[in-house]
Image 1: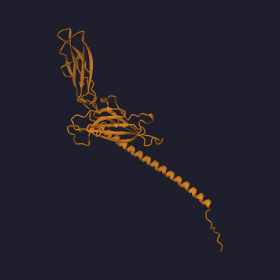
Image 2: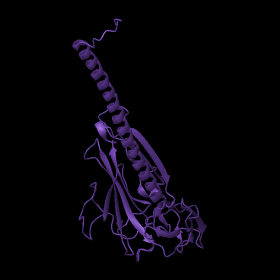
Image 3: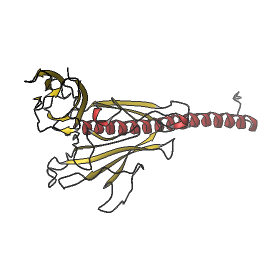
Image 4: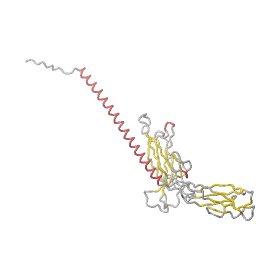
Amino acid sequence: MISLRDDRGFTLVELLVTMTISIVILGAILMVLEVFQSNARDAQLRNENQDAARTTLDGVSRQLRNVVARTTNEGTVPGALEQAEEYAITFETVDASRSSSGENTLNAMRVRYCLDDSNPEDEVLWEETKRWETKEAPEVPSSTACPDRTKEGTSEADWEKLTRVVQNITNRMNGEKHALFTYSAKETPEILSVAVDMFLDVDPKQARPGSTELTSGVSLRNANRRPIAEFSATLENANNTNERYVRLNASASYDPDGLSLTYKWWLNGAELLTTSQQYVTKEAFATGTTQKFKLEVTNPGGLSGSIEKSVEIK
């Protein structure tokens, strides 16, 4: 019997075409796989970067909630924050890592967060810390450098520890300026809350997916606001019908945080020997004259407010 099966194989041309098609398909698959792996790697980097940023924002919020409000001791600045700038913030907070700090009975430490924009496409948020065991805190560093390496490595260094906490920040990229920190007031003693607005992008050269914005806000529970001074002045008759005493009443003065106040009075630039909320002048004034009174009120945190009034004697 004669077999009808054709024993011939692929021709060389057919084999080359088949191999070419296989290589093209394999190349396409490898390219898709590479893109997939690259996207997965970028997504992982973005997630890790965002997790680090969220952890840092949570830490900043905890520290601000435990802020140590300043007093008016020599060399210090009153208020809950020592420095409040768009890209830097400095404050004292309770050091939870220590049980005691010598004469530093509040167990306070100084913390500064600042944004280094030496590379606008990869700004770095630094955390700078300073601890002490003396009764009074060291003076607030005057350097605005970020990071501040003044006398680094010595006992007189502005900051004993510098830590890079978040990278790939783009708040000031391409000429844009997004403040990292915003505040509820312009003056440090009046600030009651802080908001943080952070833009992140691990690969700013790529149009997509673009920057990720993370925000956070915290109210300052230990803020020490300036008291408001106010008083009234009423005339009282003296023995001489052409003279009047002046009754001063500072009961309208108040502290926004409900703290107690102490009082000081001045008459025509001379301090009166009284610290009372209400006071009647020892001297009677002739009618037709004008007397200038000044009141200064101070809260336990050392912040003061004052007001002056001219009183016409009738």
